[in-house]
Image (tube, rainbow, N blue to C red; front, side, top):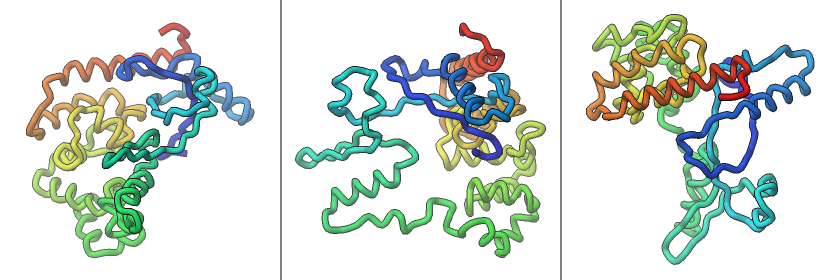
Amino acid sequence: PWMGRTVIGTTETPFDGDSGELRVEPSEAEYLIDEVRRLFPGISISTGDILGTLAGVRPLARSHSLFGGKNNLGKVSRVHRIVRDDNILTVFGGKYTTYRAVAKHVVDKLYPGSSSMTHRFALPGGEAGDWNSFSGSEAAQVARQVFGTEDLERLYRRYGSRSMQLADLVRDDATLGERLVENEPEIRAEVVYGVRHEHTIYPEDFLRRRTTLRFSEHGRRAAYDAVEALIREHSQVVPQDLEAAKSRYLSDLDHEDALRSGATTL
């Protein structure tokens, strides 16, 4: 389960090409759909149900099990390794979702005898606790006047206490409280906040990595131009390759359309 949708995966195959060309292949999509049918025979599912795809390269720490060839990939440990060479620490392996554990181990290596305290601190926006803790506060009452309860809860679950900064944006410019696209909840202020505070540079940064619009039925294409316009308006440094970025994004959507239709050659 993932934000009202379902993530199906994963596959693992060796990859040594250009990571910019990485895509989910038809054989991988078909394999995963077949596995879901096998495990859940009561579910009717096909490639036509695909909302979007995710593909990435995971670096693995080299081990002796790789010496037997690429077919031994499944035997390689997924645990990160930290190697010290004089005064240099190098981290091998690991992944985004374990970044905090990796950071703790690095700090503990740098300062032997002490212990990293990262696990004691709330992530940015988490200072006011969860939604239930925040919803009865005075700050929440003020923000409700801007967003209403339903939208405030959605924003708080995404931005935490930093949703108050979005409320400030909407107070200053009421048009930023408007939806980016019909039938999707994201508002224009979220893009502006992303540009100013979350290093949003390209529309895909917002559509895929700051929100889930990239994987929504209505937002994946329709929201792109609105997001790009806001980036152009509010970014201090507008990237020169926005047109090329859009072309790559739309090409990926075309690829997914082909997967959805069951095409075997893309």
